[in-house]
Length: 272
Image (cartoon, rainbow, N blue to C red; front, side, top):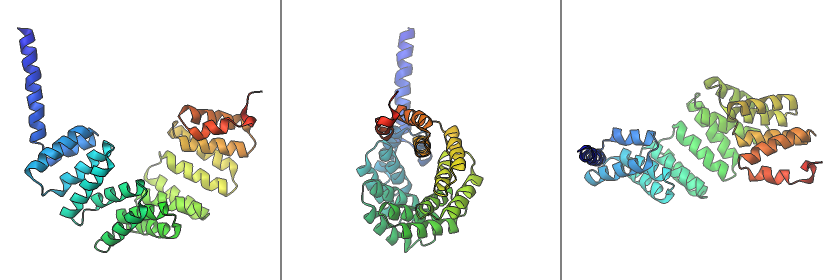
């Protein structure tokens, strides 16, 4: 008898699950996305759209779900459907642009974002996205201008401020880069990538001791942050400390860095 009750419970749970998907609300879909339960989110979105094709938010969440499932083509289609329903839907615009950028089509992302910004000219997120697209397109002047505009519109926008600082480091505008990165740290002091970028700025300022301290700080926050580990190894190598350089290249290699493996193949790091 217990087995029968057990089977009934399983069937009831399955039916309850099916009912939840077919009757999912926008809030239910959002919760599934927040949990990164992409299959469930996708099924909920599709069930919702069968009954109502007029909600752009559901199409945006469907795009998120497809992106989580690594289906960029359907993600792009879903984001574009959301934009078609709401031509002011900034998050869907950015999702669409990110897919184009990551797919090697930054020029199309730039074209779309520029058109969209004619109607939404003062949105920090769109300016940051456009800056990223210009950076991929190797136009640092336009990238910097858009990152600066994003920060001007939202002084607490950490991602845009970091992106601005990275371009400034490339352009060797190092003091301004450090200032922007330090402001970003004021928003959240536990950002490994920010410490890594400040360290790079100090490398270019020819202040190796400060750079070393900041690379180590970055790694102390995230001991699997390959970029900082490799940068520190490279820093030691060019400072002539091959023992420390080897130690950090080995750590990066253990984390899967092919670049670190290639560096360790150099004869200077062979055991003696």
